[in-house]
Image 1 (cartoon, rainbow, N blue to C red):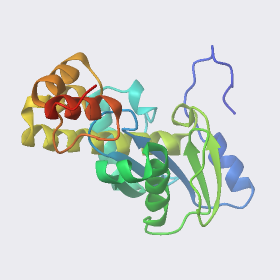
Image 2: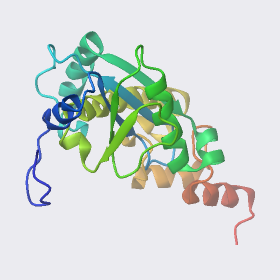
Image 3: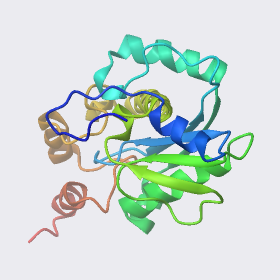
Image 4: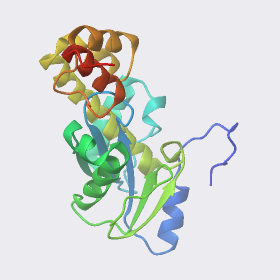
Length: 218
């Protein structure tokens, strides 16, 4: 199993999958999200059950890959694996809060797979409630498990494409460049235009921008 040391360079492998299979889990699923931190747009979660005979070469944490590599691997994963995607839009994030919306989407993604997995590997330190099978949370899982790495790629590419649609609808915010994160250009656009339809109004910078626009800020 990869080292837990914070100074070690982690590369995903099949150690977690093999351990689960050793306990009798034939179909092991990796789960990861993209978009918990941005001020706008959805949280996107992917669940991936890789074909052990057709694992794409070069799987890694999506943040460590170029956009071109992510696109290539995205296509390979979709062509060879069982993949499901769940999306929590801003209105659901506002209703549940970002953590619970992410957990909801994780459960939905697992339940949406073509075939139920036997075990689930989730990136992070929390597990969604109500999963129908055994599961484990893995800190830095996208850098340690190829299944989670694959899920991170699917989630990231899917969300980036959705940000392209958001940009086409509201180009004044520049979603194509910052993907909804709190970049200086995004905060300036919020100051100038106020929040748009894709913003998360339960996030403080968006709520403050709306208050300023309405003249109700303290």
